[in-house]
Image (cartoon, rainbow over all chains, first blue to last red; front, top):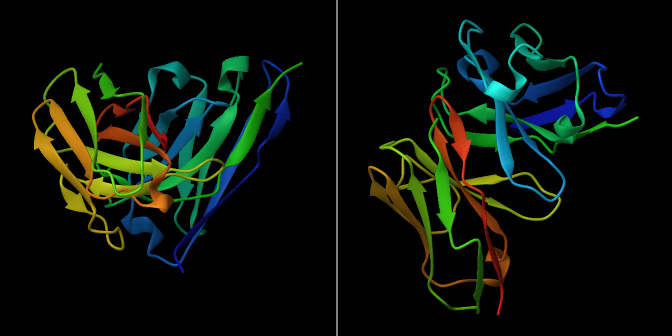
Length: 121
Length: 106
């Protein structure tokens, strides 16, 4: 079964750091780009970062540049989101999503269940 | 940056109704447009990609059309399972979602 499982969310103080993980199973992981998408409570979807299948191409949304870093370990079928200098406005459910091909340009056909990140003092 | 604007924001409809949701981009984005369905507390589900291609397993009552800057999602006969929020997405740099359209029971 094709599956994505996020972990690593939690409560963190403003200015703090957190590392999200997404474990993939059931498909050839390195053949697909992977993304992180977030959804603040009661709000819409916001794309955060994407990484190509090889890991050689990365794009981030402007609001997280310099603070969030997407990476992947194709030997372990994992994608990560390292988040530093967290702000209250980063509070959201973070979803891991699979792109439809190796290159970043693709719709997101498989999603994880999400992990909640709360930034608050 | 490309802006994606959906209309309406909320839509009240009955089972069996034909539902149309519009998504407009601030510049031409063809054909990199997808539609997703999201239910409360759940992850989004891909319905349509490349503006009009139906994702595997999605019922044929869902269809997408459009090009350039204007795109449409049609549900030909609304079913009870279809009450949800729908998002369009431009999936190229930057990957941008519309603000969502909530389809609620009339």
